[in-house]
Every structure is written in C-alpha cells, then in structure tokens.
Image (cartoon, rainbow, N blue to C red; front, top):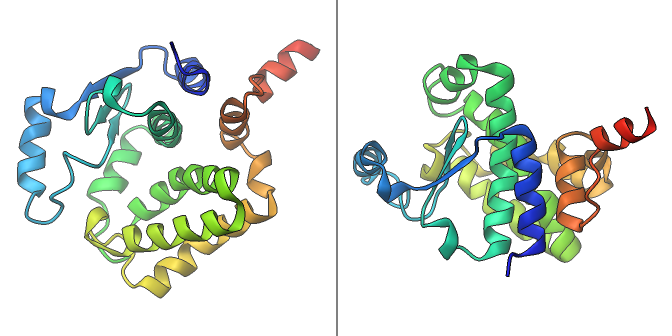
Length: 201
C-alpha cells in the first residue's frame, strides 16, 4: 500500500521535476568515490546524508527501505535545492561547492533555505518543543564538520538560522513558495497555490 503523504510529496516534486530519479548512493561508482574521499571528515556522507544534483536524488539507502515519512520529508527538503538549482543553474553549484571557503559560505545560504522545510515539519509534528530540538540539531550541522564548517561557531550559526526559525514560529513562512505547496502536500491539502490560481482563471 502506497503511503498517502509520500504519494502527495512525490506528486508535488514531479510537478517541478518530471524526470525525478531516486538512486541509492552505493549504486553509483563516483558517489562511492566521493564517499571515500570525504570519509576522514564526514564519515556519514554515504550512510546518512542525501545529495541532490538536478533530477537525481542520491539517497543513503534504497528508497524502498526508507520509512515513508522520512522519505517524504527528505524529498520535500531536496525539492528546495532542486528549485534553486533550476533557477540559478551553474551559479548554484559554484557557490555551494567552490566559491567561498569554510567559515562563512554561500553553502549555508542554500542549506538554510532547504532546512526551513525541516523546521516547518518539526513545528507540524510537535510544536515549539520539537521546533527547538531541530534548531539545536541544525546549529550543530551548520557549525560542524557535517557540512564542512559552513557557518563556524554555534552562537553565530544560531543567529544565522534565527530569521528562518522566527518565520516558522510566526507562520510567515507558511505563505511563501515553495513552502506553501510543501505544507499543503504534507497536510493533505493537495491544491498548490498554482492550482488554485488555475481553478479561478
């Protein structure tokens, strides 16, 4: 039986990425090579973290083995990256990986946009306590080795995340795309803003 929430998220993602591919990292030779290269610094690259490039989402395990809720939230997060990649093209990849050193990087800007999804879903799951728990996790991610110290210093990382946390807390982010459509798909209100406009035309 197909999980309804996952089906809605997949439908939303495929509206923007019709040729979406979900691939296990271990099935791709160059991904295994990257995992080996990063192992001394980010040993969990292959076993924990998802990577997205264009239409392909490289998962740490086969999609069929992931809990539907985990896969749905992962794809919602990665959709933000895919939309940014579509909009900015080579600039996204250059700024994410190469343009700035560790410490204060544009990589953090792109990840803050995507992790806004995780903050929204945390609020959906458990309100303020769950939101704060996820914020603490993100502070560690942003300031630590997992993302190659993309925003060094826990207090600095917390301050960098705070505008998005506050927008989630107040509900302001609920009215901004793509978060509007992601929340509707997550909750089961399947009409996106684009579909609403089309129905009124």
